[in-house]
Structure formats: C-alpha cells, structure tokens
Image (tube, rainbow, N blue to C red; front, side):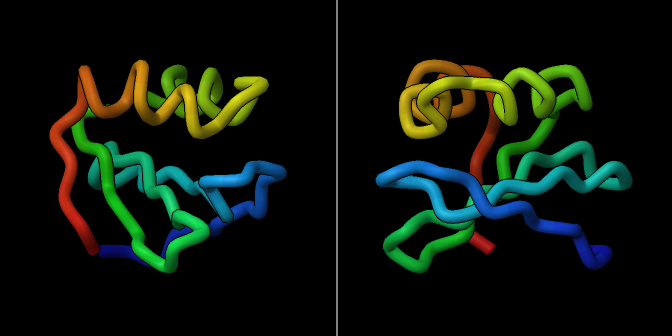
Length: 72
C-alpha cells in the first residue's frame, strides 16, 4: 500500500481519514488505535465522508454497508 496522507478529524470514534487512489480505499484510523481500509470506494464517496457531520455515523451507515473492510 502506498503512503496515504491521513487527515485528523473531529470525532469521538474516528481519529483520522485518508484515501488511497491506487487501491480505491478509504482508510480510517479509529480512536481505539485500529486502522481499517474500506474498498471499492470512489473519490466522491471519500469527499462525502470528509464532509460528513458525524464521521462515526458515516462509517456505520455507509462504509460498513457498501464497502468490503479489512484491518490494516
């Protein structure tokens, strides 16, 4: 996996988010210390995630339902 620029976010569940163009994955660093990659994610989906008022709700309502996930 290429080095992905992560950006810190204001959330009680999510610490930072990033997008891997090569793999088309959204990366999520959780406050718990775990990092997950959500695959088959478009740049537009990442933009929606970055703009979401609640990052945690977006993970649970959108990413977990529409993207395969793996811990990285």
